[in-house]
Image 1: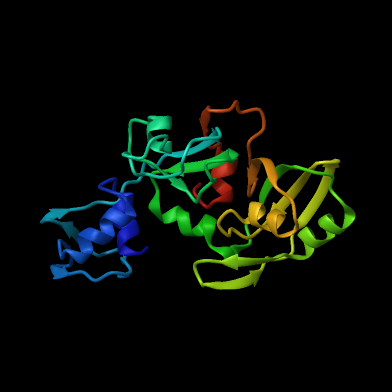
Image 2: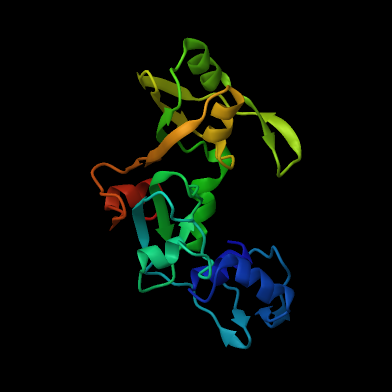
Length: 233
């Protein structure tokens, strides 16, 4: 586990805040000043400001049906942040993101080590969405969405073609899409590139974790079966 993830997993602070502590040389590993990107080994002793940290074992794993308007950030000064919305008594953070204008399934946890397992693109974990657009869906739209769409990637400052995915028509303006990729606002950008505007977007599944009948704004703990699917049982 990376050092920032380890520090986060103890409940001390977020990964971003852990990076700052490392940059400020406030983190020691086995008595030596630590560097960014260090991989923590089982026998390592990690200290922050002279305090020995211990990895937390009783982690929390939550599924939330996020309403439109809630922002997936741990920055508490941001109005409508997901942390204040859930108001959980322990420090948790969202795994990945679901943009402000979208609703549906988002996972939150106190386990920093599970994040990469779920989000790493090469693991090809599926995410399923129901999407409604502003005009009639054509066969060419369905075909292009499933084959991949050329979209601009601001992170790399270049255009990229999205991975092929599964798309199923529900009615004239609504479709279901299953992705194994996680570009920022990917579905909205794909639709826009094809001349469509997303009216509503709802995520209903991440891997084998389903939204089912969880009401908007409500959350629940993951079941044992769901925890097994993310390697936590």
